[in-house]
Image (cartoon, rainbow, N blue to C red; front, side, top):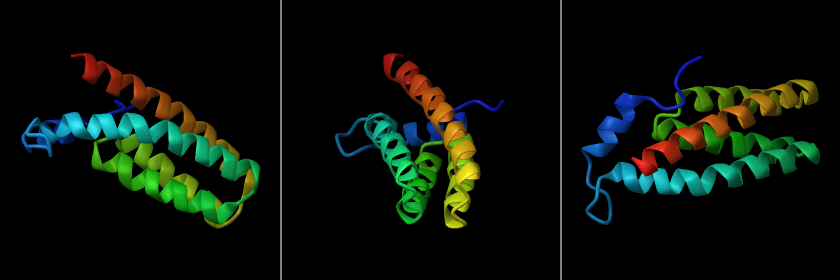
Length: 117
């Protein structure tokens, strides 16, 4: 399985100054750690309510957000979840949501490790 975070993307973010003068990667990690649990909760709520359009929009947001900080596997899985929601395929959504949930866990762990280093 691929690493949860792309080191090239993270390295590029380290070279860009963030809003507080520290490397942008610090800011991005903080934002990602706040956003990912919220996205996960929203995805589960939408799936439980069979709100396919809200699920699709949330998966689309997660796809872009995760791709921006190098969580490429998560971004691809969110893209697949977005497709499943678009066709309102409940079993496919459930399978994709399981994958996304596991990958969010892996990404969160990798972000925590980055934060502590």
